[in-house]
Image 1: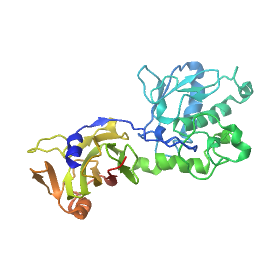
Image 2: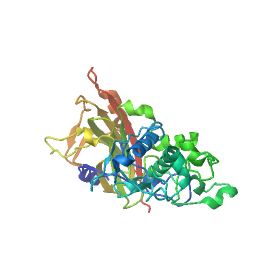
Image 3: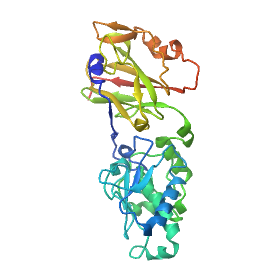
Image 4: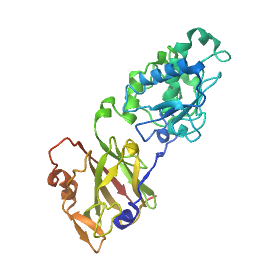
Amino acid sequence: MMKILLSLFFTFALLQYNLPAQTYRAALLKSSIWRQGEISVCWENPTSQNAEGREWVRDSVKTTWEKYSALTFPGWKECNYASMGIRIRIADEGPHTKGLGSYLDGRHDGMVLNFSYRNWSPDCQDEAEYCTRVIAAHEFGHALGFAHEQNRKDTPAWCADQTQGTDGDITVGAWDKHSIMNYCNPEWNNSGVLSSTDIEALQKFYGNPDTKKEFRVELNTNAGREFVIFGKDDLVEIVVKLSKPGYFFIMGTTENDEGSTSYLLNFGGNDNQPEFLKRIAKHETNKWISIGSFDAAEPYGKETIRAVAATTNSLNLPNYRYDLTSGLFLVTDNQKRGINITGKDRSFPAGKSQYSETIIMIETRDTK
C-alpha cells in the first residue's frame, strides 16, 4: 500500500470534494456540504435601485448562518463570468436555489431572490424588508446544503404532504417543527431565526464561531473522516486544510500483515533533498487541499495519518532515515511510537507561533 501511496501523494492542488450520499430523507445533503470556510457571494444584477435589499440580505446572513458557525461570506460585489461561490440574481419571481450547497458553486443564477414582490407574493410589498430577510435566511440554508425539514423520513403525518425539493441524507436531531427550513413551522421561515436544531446541525458540519480565531489543521478523505473503510480498488483521497497561513508536515503509520512502518511524507523533493514541510498561503486557507490519492490495494491494513502545523516555519521534524528497500523516509519501525512521536519528540521554539495537530485513521480491506 505504501509505495502506491507515496508515489501519488506528491499531487498538491486545490480541490473541493463531494462525499457519497445515501438515499433516505433527512435535513442535509452530505455531498453538497462546502469544503471551505469562506464561501464567496456575488450579485448577478446589482443596481442602485436594489442596494437596500442587498444590504438586508447580507445582514440576514450575517446574523444567522455566519453568526453561529465558523463560516464567513466574503464578496457581495457584482459577479463576473468566472465568479465562484453563491451567485444571486434579483428577480420578481418565487425565490429559490437551483440545487443545494456546493452544487451552487459558480452556478449562474444559482440563487434567485425577490425584492419588489409585484408579481410574486404581493402581500410582501408592505413588509418588503421582513420578507426579504426571512426568505434570504431560508434560501441560504439551502445554499449550505440544508434540505426542507418536512422532507425528513420522520416527519409526522400531519406535515407529510408538504415535501418539496431535493431530499437530504443526513439526520441531525429530532424532527424540528421550528426549523427555519420547515414549511410546517407555524412561524413563516421561523421569522428568519435559526432554531436550536438548525444551529446544532450547522455547527456539526461548519464549526463553531469561536474557531474563527483559532489556528487549526484538519484532515479528511473523500469518504469522510470517521470509521473510514475502503474496499479493493476504491479511490482513497487525503485532503488537508489550515485555518490560517502556515506550514505543515505529514507523518503516516502503516500496519498490515507485512508489519508496521512509520514515515515522513515527501512532497516532491528527491532522495537527497526531501521536501517535508509544505506552506499554505493566505489564498489557500480554509480550503481542502489534496495531498494525494491512491487505489486501495494489497497489502491491506490500517493507515494512521497525522498532520502537524504551525503559523511560522518553526516545526522541528522527528528524526528519520531513508530506506532504500521501501523508498520511504522512515521515522520508526514501531507503530505506537510512530503515532506518538510528533507529540513526544518534537519541540517548538518559544515565540508567537501557533500550533495544531490532527489525526485520521483509515482501513483498507480486500472487499468491494
